[in-house]
Amino acid sequence: MHKCRVHCIHGPATCENAGASRRGHRAATLAVAVLMLAAAALLPANVATAASPPRLAAIPARYLTWYKHAAKTCPGLSWEVLAGIGTMESNNGRSTARGVHKGKNRKGAEGPMQFLPATFAEYAVKVDPSRKLTPYDPADAIFTAARMLCADGAAGGSPQGLRRAIFAYNHACWYVRDVLAIASRYTASARGLRHGRKHPHHRHRRHHQTRHGHHHHPRHHHRRRGGRVTRC
Image 1 (tube, one colour):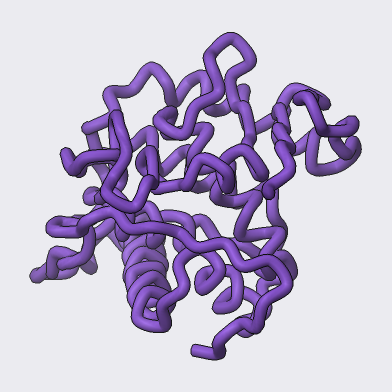
Image 2 (cartoon, helix red, strand yellow; image 1 turned 135 degrees about the vertical axis):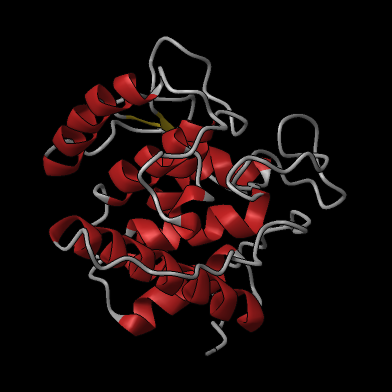
């Protein structure tokens, strides 16, 4: 049975069987992040950043902001990895598959980051205290995913820890490889964007659209506490 551990970015929050949330640097970082998210919330969810190259343009502007700020709550976790998972799970919230925006998929997963209810309750992060905590809220889902990945090995940023964290998110080696491949493309696109700003006359003539996320069906996330972790 999973313990309910709800974490609020504005300070400690509790549920029936939970103790007080840890204070300190992470809470302060989250508090700053929510101020940035307030501005992002004014943007339409399905609009990509105008200046973004095609690969980054596949991420709605609000999602990109959430990925970046959620990653900052876990030193060592990159926003690109979070975005890779979001792309795999729901095409960054654009999927209309069952369980993404309402209901559950056939395995019981919910929301744009596809959490099982017990797993979401264990790592839940409430981004906006004025709104109901729910896995269907993209901000809550993304910050919760960051917290879960951090607890499962992403903290510190070691390749082994990162792979272990992604594998814990979905127990499949092909999933780990695909998430990291998507993350690498997002990293390359962001680097190209920065280079283009410094050298506006050097532009890429061709862009290749990512193939991930467009036909993805949300999947079930198994949680195996204390079990053997397969190496991928």
